[in-house]
Every structure is written in structure tokens, then in C-alpha cells.
Amino acid sequence: MVKKKTCIFISGRGSNLKNLIHRSRDKSFPVEISLVISNNKDALGIDYAKKYNIPYEIIDTRIKNHELKVLKFLKKYKISFICLAGYMKIISKKIIQNFEKKIINIHPSLLPKFKGLNTFQRVLKNKEKKTGCTVHFVNNKLDGGKIIVKKSFYLKPNESELSLKIKTQTLEYKAYPEAIIKTFRNC
Ligand code: GRF
Image 1 (cartoon, protein in one colour):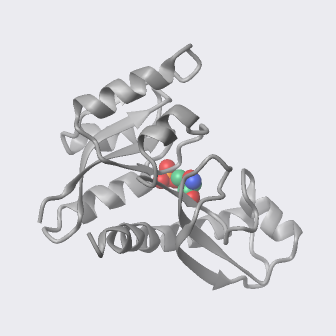
Image 2: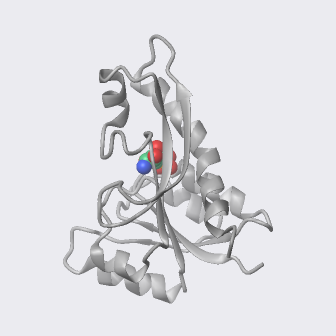
């Protein structure tokens, strides 16, 4: 099997990146992590790229034409698939056009509920019975692309934002690899 050369976009801790690096070492896993892009030079996740000898690029998304820079690196590393993992920037139209149906994202809620930021806070405020995570394709609508995998759990009494985050992220480490396998199942 020829693994798809994949780029992971991060902005922060990179625990999903770490998990995907581990999973991609499995021979039958459909992708290899060939590049990490961060828009934040201080993202802790960059350390995983260093540790596992994965090329990484830091791109300041505040500068004009940063998308062209991103596209240049994606081309240089022959990237054919993109996973957003805690990337705190909206992907520009230009990049989406170049990678149509080849960009996926993980979101810490049961989409279409709670798109955008501060999901745990809103889940608690709304007294939701259930929450979880969703892996979906990225299109021009925020957190609005086709859903690939959703995983959920029931809230217990006295949940906090922190307890929800821990439980949700534990599910994310299962959901993201599962969604990647599902995406390439029929390729
Ligand atoms: C995850 O909870 C993901 O759902 C959200 O950002 C978080 C990233 O965490 N989009 P990490 O950087 O992978 O630890």
C-alpha cells in the first residue's frame, strides 16, 4: 500500500498530532506524516515533529499571502492529504480549492451542535446530556463539511470544562485515526 503523504496543521499542544504519528507507524495505516505546519512558533506540538524527525514549517498567518507560502510547502513535500489538529485558523479558500475533499478536521463537539470556539463552556451552559467529538471534511463553511466519524459520551453530574476536555480528547484519539482509515477504505 502506498501511504498518502499527509500534512498535519497545528497551533498548540499537538496531542492529536502525537497520536497520529504513532498510528501512522502501523504498516496498514493509510497515511504517513510527511510535514507539520504550525502558525504558532511556540506550539508545543512542534516538539513532536522534532522528536520524530518530521519536517515542520512555521508560517505566520498574519502576513500577506501566507497561503501561497503554505501551498509552496505542500507542493515541496508532495502532500496529498491534510489533517487539521487544533489549528486555530480558518483555512483559506485558495487552499481548500487546491485540496478539495482532501482536508479533514477534528472538532470537540457533536457537530452540527456547537460549531466554533468554547465548546465545553457552551455544552455545560446548555445542559447537554451528551457530547463528544466529530471528524469532518473541511469546506468553506466553519465546521460545516461532511461528517466522517462522531463519538460521544453521556455527561455525569458535576462535569467541568476540564473534565469534558479530558473525556473528549480521549475519544478524539480513537476518532481521528478511525476517520482517516474510513476516508481511504475504498481507495
Ligand atoms: C482538540 O480538542 C480538537 O478537537 C480541537 O483542538 C484540540 C487540539 O488539541 N480542534 P491538541 O493540540 O491535538 O492536543
